[in-house]
Amino acid sequence: MKNKLLFIIPIVFFCFSCKKDWLEEKQDIKLIVPTTLNDLDLLLNVNEFQYDGRGAGETSCDDYEFTLEQFNQLNWGFDRDFITWKKDRNLDNLPIQQNEWKCAYTQIQICNVVLKKLVNVSRTEKNKNDYDRIYGTALYHRAKQFLNMVMSFSKYYDKTTSNVDLGIPLKLDDDISEEIKRATVEQTYRQIIEDLKISAQNLPVSQVDYSRVAKGGAFALLARTFLFMDQYGEAKRMADSSLKYHSFIQDFNLITNLNGSRPLNLQSKEIHVRGIMVKPSSNASTGRINSSLYGQYEQNDLRKTLFFRNEQDGKVTFRGHFMNNLFTGTTTAEVLLILAECKARLGDTNGALQALNTLEIRRYKKTEFIPFTASNEHEALKIILKERRKELLTRGLRWQDLKRLNRDPEFAQTLVRKIGNETYSLSPNDSKYVLPIPQFVVNFNKVKQNEY
Image 1 (cartoon, helix red, strand yellow):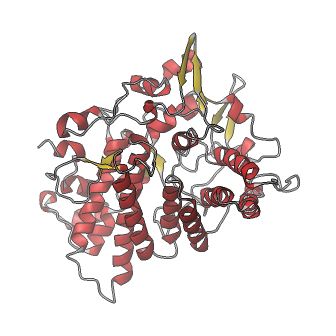
Image 2 (cartoon, rainbow, N blue to C red):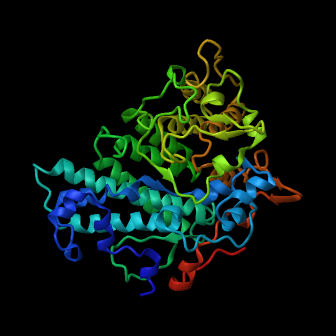
Image 3 (cartoon, rainbow, N blue to C red):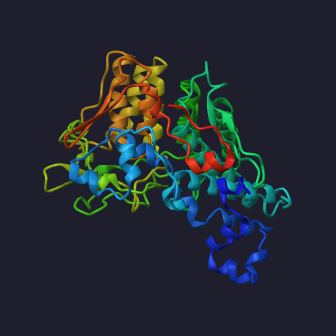
């Protein structure tokens, strides 16, 4: 029974989330077992798959500042604990759509059910396209959630220690009685890469709509994964592959709805697949964007208008999300920034700037845009990292970027947050950059907790 408490996702749960027409075909809900490709396709389209993780890291990162009043207005006490980097931070007793651990393993278990049942479905000439797409989609979503979890709950990938550093539970079977234990960081990343490579082989070339991933999205997530392993050659190769299939970049110069509450459109062709951040409190609207960060946006940077809303206190909140909550999926813009960074780190200054300027000419006013230049790869890297932070604000990536950049003395920084009369700080490489495993998982499954 104890292992069920980690995942709590029997087949019956999936079926209640599926579309009405499927439920009407199955009169006895307790007896539902997915057997056809259509059944499995519907399982991968339940609402749970629009939710994505990394909310706790987003809350913890340095993109936000709070007055004491704003801090006290946050919905949850533990949210304040993440903001002030307390050692004891817990995600217990939250529903799936607010708890990133439960959200991730719910999706992982659905994917495992689909993958297990696919073995019993014959792949034929008639159904091969649907079969391959479903297979690739299940692997993509499982890998995405494994990556979310290792980014939040494990140390940053270090090839010298990854074989002993604790990763996450790699749930690869739909058996809820399976013994639960943490893999190493190395094993975790290798599983993510394996899943995504097979996924990319099987997914279709083109998206059906923004809720369905295609090849470009799988390669984009591979590029993100390899970037966070410091494998810049592989990350560059995956970014190039993603752009081969999905190269559209939205030109912010063409957006006319400048005064709307959400000027960026969910239907943007930049998006590889939808993704809403799982987080209890909306610090993007309750708190304020860090003043020093906002000051980095130049007047001719269109994001200064599109991303932010001026508040009565003279500061700004974020409004540049594609959905009704913070967006976390990959986009063409992120892929170009990965490509630019990898080329700079590999010594290709001109190539790095070309990739960067391909994006930035669509982010700055074209009549005033001056292409970025740099005299060497190191100077180019500094520019690219600055633009990365400005473009990918609120995507749930900043916490992981802090973890990786803190290893370089030039980019390392101590985070400081002043709230009322209290000042809080977080040193580079502090153990609290690794978030604690939810206590209910530790209690019921004997999973080893992170140490502080």
